[in-house]
Every structure is written in C-alpha cells, then in structure tokens.
Length: 157
Image (cartoon, rainbow, N blue to C red):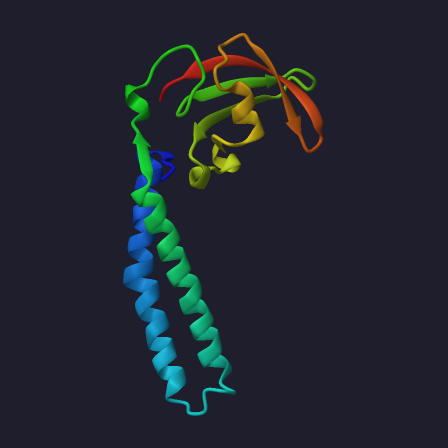
C-alpha cells in the first residue's frame, strides 16, 4: 500500500470534503432518487437515471477520498528545515529567459493548485528542483519546451 504524502492542510481539506459528501450530497441524491421513483415508470424517467448517475459519482468520490485518507502520510511542514528542496518547501524561482519570478510550495498531488502557488510533488517543476539548493539552476521539460530556472530561496512556512 503506497503512502500518499500530504500536508496537514491538505488532509483537513480532504476530510472536510468527505464529511460534505456524506452529510449533504449523499442524503440529497437519495431524496432525489426517491422523488423520481414516485413519478412512476423508471425505464423512461430521466430524473431517476440522472440521480442514479450522480449517486454513483458521489459514492466513487467517497471511496477515493477514504482511500487517500487511509494511505495518508501527513507531513508537518512546520517541523521541517534545511537548505535542500523537499516536500513541503516553499521555493522561489526565477525564469532564466524572462526574469519572471515564481513561488511554489511542493505539496501532495490532490492539493496542487498552481493559482494558489502549490505544485504537486509529481509535477515536472517539483521533480526538477527536489534535492537542489538556493543558487542552483535547473532545467524543466514543459509543454512549451525546456525552461531554465534559478532557485533563489528555499523556505519552510
């Protein structure tokens, strides 16, 4: 059973989503199925089929989240330190071509949200900078071609 690394914040977000699915979404879809059944002939009842499809999706989401939580390896970023980039680090980078600055925290796959400055541990950028230190230059294969970044700062927030 492979562990799923995540921050405490990521674990809490998954737990909140699981609670929402079980206490709000599941009962709502069960009520919708009951209401659609009351309309009679189920073979041609679009409401019933849509509700059943939604129920299947919700149950799949619940199973997926429960699996992730069971395999979670919660890493307390506040207890980490050092100059090398690893899971949980917040890294400042400068694009060597455009001089554009970026700042990313390396997080678990399900927590990734580039707009919020969080990149997955499995992303090309994270894989390229893991183990590196401030001042190192890395090359990253991106969909737009190879990009070079200089690591300017490694922080533990």
